[in-house]
Length: 222
Ligand SMILES: O=C(CO)[C@@H](O)[C@H](O)COP(=O)(O)O
Image (tube, rainbow, N blue to C red; front, side, top):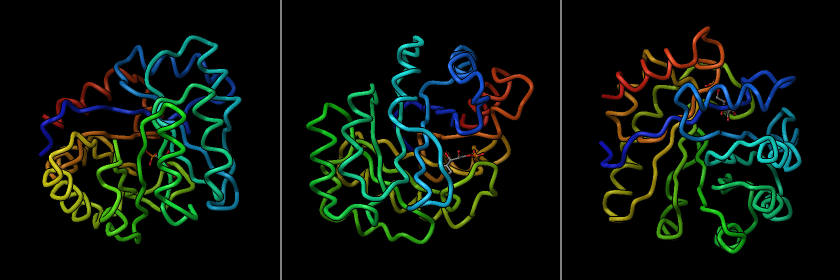
């Protein structure tokens, strides 16, 4: 298990887009730690969501919490710095969507953000071999990216254990995030596999009381 305190990052992909600022503020007031901001381009993944203007609008609205941007876009380099300028705290991308992973990590850091690498269910962790020391976060996808409300893929637990081993071996305080199908019923086992940062969309925004579900998640993490 991780030694870092758990972070719950509600995915605003499942928020009320017609009242995005208000709903985001509500989920943070209910106990969410970070805002998970899913960027989909209808190219790398078959869906289209939010760009840097929406992120800036959230900052202008007064959202002060860390914003954790998950880029599901190809190419990555042209757009990543725009999210930094718009107010992102951390930017993660998929290694197979970048021409030069090391360069993209540098671009994100130079723009003043923390950087993360994202692994789809079938993407091997060996992308980490030469860049782990440059990462602030490793994100393990427990669904195929593109949509909220999918079912957790159990094989992600093995991947989390392996990622946890690599992170611990590195001795660096790299966060291990999990995303997809996370809810009160499985978050305890996911934490036991080594995750310390939990993205949840439909489980939180689909609940009548955000505070209640976030508190139940924290209890299950232990
Ligand atoms: O990146 C994605 C989907 O591609 C996620 O962040 C989803 O938004 C998670 O949604 P739930 O599975 O928790 O409903």
